[in-house]
Image (cartoon, rainbow, N blue to C red; front, side, top):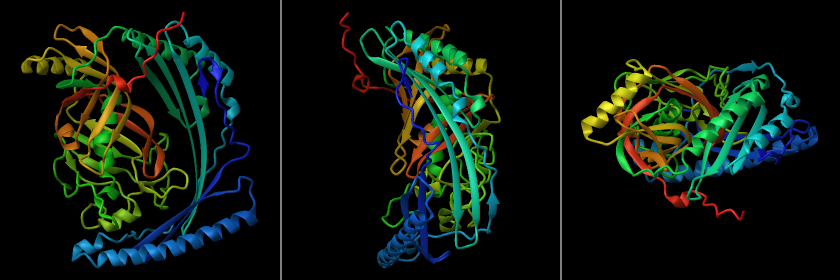
Length: 485
């Protein structure tokens, strides 16, 4: 990490890599249900056969006794349920083919990263009213070894780097606003040059300078044109987390999300919209050959012409929901996890498309036509979503925070506003989409959930929706004191 022209942190795990272990034991029956237990451990950072064997034996022993306890506990809870409700107290596991697989390992050389030049970039951008410049570069090379009692043996190797440039600048009232740009890839040769970072950083500074005396947004249900980044983040939060199939099973303690439960084959968004999740795109950072269950990642058509056609599955959810989904009890290879965390179904490379997409100019015209038809003074343009979140276990309340927001007036004027963000619930948000663009753009990110942070990509066009655009409280902004000199 580089901050305001200086090197803040520089962690070097290349000469002494980290090793993490996860053991998983299942007890019972694939189809009738059973229990499961996981054990996580950190292994010695220097390869030591004796130490590793001792840790592995200990982890397996812990997993075994925990699994016995888990299975017995599930049996007790099942006694209080009747019929199909008893099934919800158990875990299941799909029948899959044995796999023997070995990736070709590609080694990375961190010396390729021009740290000194990047340090100079942050120094050059820290000028004028700029309060902070943070540049963070993370490089990961992850090798995974998987073996199970079904006979699967696999070695997979994956490289990912991510670089983010975050700039902060106060407005005239002293509130600190931030804007960012991020880049992702697999080869270090693709890390942007210092010259490109400088150019992109200056654009961020100009955007932030326009907020100096900009008005605060007024909360309202408004027509908004979202750029590809904001549209993609919205679909990720409002839809993708809710179709992770582990949300649809009740589990041992009764938790369940009903957002898209029982909606297979039903319309969940307007006609013309289709959604695919494709881990086979290995050129994108969300791609992989095998998932954490040892199942080949598969391209999944989640939505076709607005109709829900599938969920994201692991081996556990696929067999549990075998009569309610199109997989017929087989996993579609979406069990994912960070390091040694227990896996759950997760997104990989999301692609949103519209068969009736419009050009950018047509989207602007449609936005203003809707605004005038409703008697509103202006529409909104939301760009460069910096974050999003969803409460998927409850009603699916989600929020998306754009870095930039503008009022678009019928006469074509464009006025920046502060503090606008999008809020809503899945069905209302998705059904409120009025039009989409025809040209999609792709951005990378890291998605966080119960199984940790995993790399993903999102490809989506711009879109128009009538949604609740709320205003952030000023307490959510850092307020800087007046300068001493």
